[in-house]
Length: 210
Image (cartoon, rainbow, N blue to C red; front, top):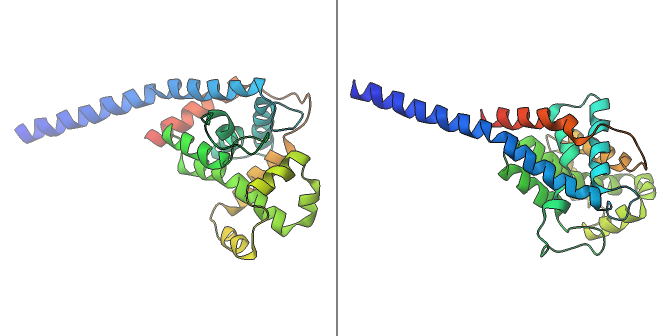
């Protein structure tokens, strides 16, 4: 009987703890949105749109393409590392935070986002370096700011790096995030506001917690 009561008590504690975490997801999303909103006041590393406009455009391209929940969220948050980074972090001149893809992935992992979302965020710079190696036309289409950051990010991949990247289970998805990233630089483009994604982000974090 005592063992039974002990099991019930432990189960109840786990349930209450889980419920508290789930209820906390609204706070987590508020915090993420606050960070993204900072981007409304910051230009997107030398481009003609703000950080927030870039994020919203990338996310909506994912929506229009029928992307999965994780792909849409990764598109929305792929550059959050530029916004959540400490001022002491190394910079790429005027082109944002060095290693922003890793900083962003770590930040999102700490706030309860899935491994896939974090990997896609981390992988969007890998995808850029891969495409720069694989496709000379891609390099030619890069904006001046993207060309400058490519140098700071290690330049085009080597053949060995490209081969390894092609073995990544998320290879195709990382390339897709990159495509949306590169297209999301249109001045005065009308897309849904940040609130459009609130329920999606809450649902995602809750699913991860379960």
